[in-house]
Image 1 (cartoon, rainbow, N blue to C red):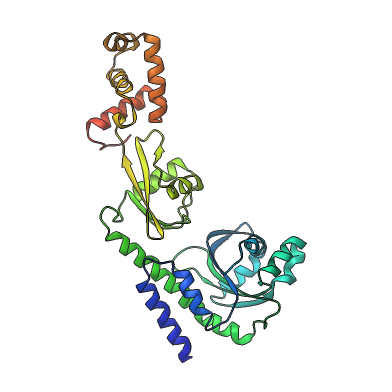
Image 2: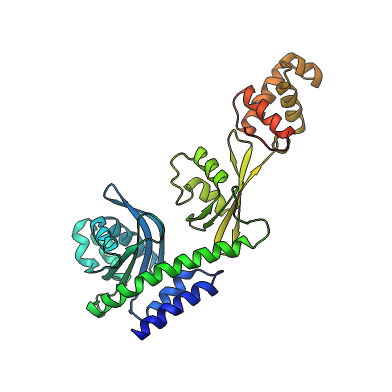
Length: 331
């Protein structure tokens, strides 16, 4: 028991000191000294409609070729995940190879064997402050010693500390990031892990993401937004006159919601035509003022609408009025 307490203390020390490093690898490397294993999956998710929705997955010493069949195997066993999470730290022993008859083919079996992950010890615990559950799946090769009751007992005791120390690490990452100029948490900002797991999302940015991606559940960034955020590309929000900007911060992504005035997105001619049209001038009046043909004015406005993400004169008027107030007010 003393060794377990020392390990728990070690976890919390790592969580506090490694705010700029991936915590899972450090914790799992230390765990091998308590419960030896060859590879591991550490994941969180929800059981929805009899299927597991994984929100975050961390693979440790897991051969890439073996990862897909193993995740497939995990997704096919929601009843086991529910049982382990419901028991708050219960451990479940099973040989992964024995589960192949439930849907994995010979190729998947071969990948599991190559990855030396045939034996499994699954531990589940209630997720810290979030819906769903958190699980740790430890693996050994078939040629190694099977997991036993002592491994189960130690894993059951250690799993809550692993879960809580990871939550502490996330909270400290957020606090550490908050001290950096320009990325303090607020209504216009979000902090996520590089895989899109949301650590913090301000209300206004969350509303903007939800308006653009109605299926968003607030737990992970929508795939389209995540892909562009990982490349640090600006993402325009149609009809809102705003963009989402992202940049990396250690092992996280910092997202900011920023208003962009129409003149930042339009050429000088497009802006002049759009400004006059929003002010109430018709096609012919704008054409005379700008020295253009009425048909050209229509084409310029069509391109301007596309760049601004709008489709009506009323939306254009609101954008121009917002630009006059420096970006304040609603669109």
